[in-house]
Amino acid sequence: MDLIEGDLVITLKKIESIQAIVDLREGMTGVITVTGSVFNSATVYGVLIEGREYFLFADEIQKVESEC
Image (cartoon, rainbow, N blue to C red):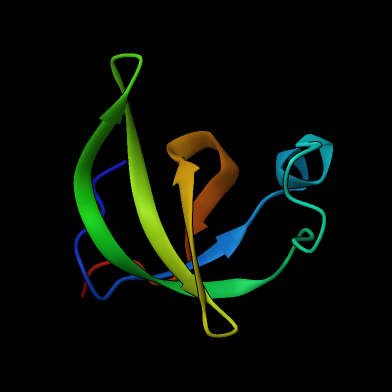
């Protein structure tokens, strides 16, 4: 998935299985704020959701808008 800063994303069902994050649910929308961060050789994205920034893996979010 190719995400850039400012892209609108939505959280996927997998987010609900993360024990450390109790206030995120499937279907929440957010904006990409940080790209290029890496954790254990996997890319993570900074996502601003309801005024809080979370760092999520690509398989926990989906881009809402397709390129025009």
